[in-house]
Image (cartoon, rainbow, N blue to C red; front, side):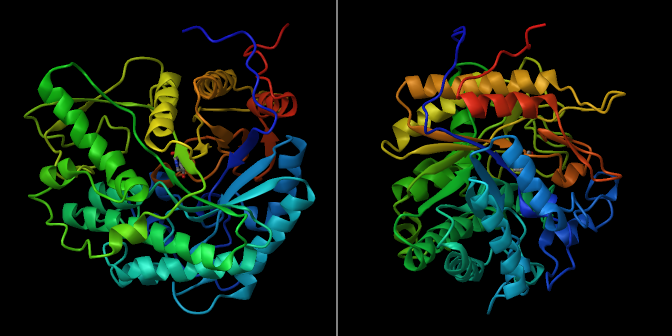
Length: 475
Ligand code: IFM
């Protein structure tokens, strides 16, 4: 359906941008911070492109004031960032290091002073290494450690931060971290993957309760899921079964217990040869299903699958990096296909209809629950021109089409309250190192100078007027 010429958002719509601690902060050995699993992983030869690490990243730890000033200049109304757990609790347990918390207090104060709403993500993949050494997410105790950490941060910042997200994309933590091993801690154990998923769910539930116990009632608690839009190559029952398997492993494994208090029975059936799920203890499902104030959806591209007898070894078409190990336990018989259409630098097909579909699914699945797009964006091979300007018309087109899809979902009845562009600035893109640039702001990795790209100016105009500017500025 062609988008209307003028796309205008409700006045209270939040125009945000997002980042995460390990991807931008640097200062990994400063003020008592200890290694997280991503420090260990990125320092392990062969794990990241060019052996790159987040040691310096974009040095946001020292440049946060300038970065907030830049956000204000762009007219952002909200900023989503994550807390580095091992900066706050270096061993992943016990009392907090105040100097670590002070960094976030200063950051929040700076944001509030500029009228930018902070949204905190407690966990964006950087588990303290000591907790991984004790077993990591496949161990139940990690969920209790997370709840303790949530309480500490909630007590420290709950008076001034209203928007809270427990976990970012727990699918990646479990399935890429413990399944395909392309993310930290780099384990490749199908049973551990599903144990990790359950304990991440438990961490979310216990963490939500811990936050609520110490924070003002007005604060909102949510989780950010990278729920997949999974489509079949045909209507053949076998292909529809493939969709069901991937949908359970990508989506149902999280939203089942979180929103509805149960795992999908078809998930148990498909993974019976991998695990018996005996680590799901009495009371866990009730602990996980906490009333939420909002749901965060992260969207980049849809998945296209079919049933096949072929094993999915080698380079993968599911968009989750190269590994000989499948991140999909119990679904090794499912083949991922490249969705047709233009792609971003990540190789991800551009398909805004998937975002509309995703929003409408959750509007139906969780009626009454406000939704936020907590990540959406695109990587391109951006380069400054001789004058130092960075023109990224492809990103503008991507943002325009996806924001228009969000607006269409609002028109269709979904309660979407805001959008966080991924990402505020170029940063450490995990196993891809600094090779993939997602930022609206260009970072020169030699000088660390920041230059807003043309997409940042475009987005600033959208935020200022509440209306999407045209994709190509009039000549
Ligand atoms: O950079 C990541 C982010 O940390 C989590 N969501 C996807 C982004 C792009 O890959």
